[in-house]
Length: 301
Image (cartoon, rainbow, N blue to C red):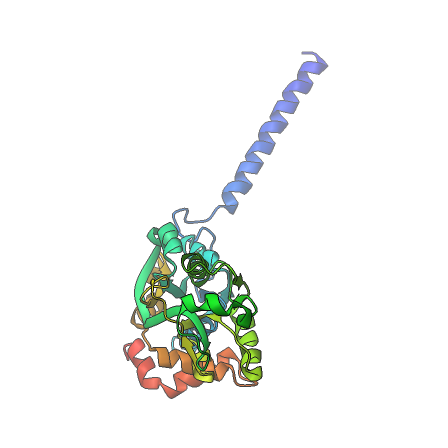
């Protein structure tokens, strides 16, 4: 055989060896259970909660975290995300649960991801959304905003642009012909900061609003009437979990399936969160300490 032929044969053998080495590494790195909904192996002792950084969801998520850690004895991690990522991360199995699903407000996300998550039902009922103003202003309904655009500096102060409340508000601008008003995107925190300044200086302001929210207990605000029903009749906040959580964490699943509270409960936690030097963790632990009987019911104890 010629040296050239020996070279070609040696090169083929080396190629096969490299191929099998690559295959060995690939198989060794694959998940043990390819059918697992998580896709990536995770620490089974850690419960992962996902939420959107609205004050209402910060409050509820930290209460759930406190119960999981103090009463169930498990480590709990929190991940703040956008609204779309909230549903998507549960559908992919990357996160375990959320208590931040406003329905029917998040109907678009529900339609896209609903068949890949488990809905445990509402943990809070009696939600409401709309536009709110200081109670003393001589404006009673959304259509009346058209005549006082300049008093509001041509702005409606909003929150995150992908929120269902913002989608409804953009529709309200069109339905009521409010061409002179601009919807300003931001966050829950920036909205309430601007509102605080306006209330302190007695300035006219209109904000996107929802119940439950601590701002209704801090200031005298009221919703504007919505004669065309753009914002709907209200709804509830649901608990969602990933597929497979019941098998992986049965005690956590059972707790979340019984987790129920009221608008007033949530607003109390939110109010404590606004106190100087009080973290969401401290406010949540303060609440569960003051409501042990209710927490016992959640845990069936």
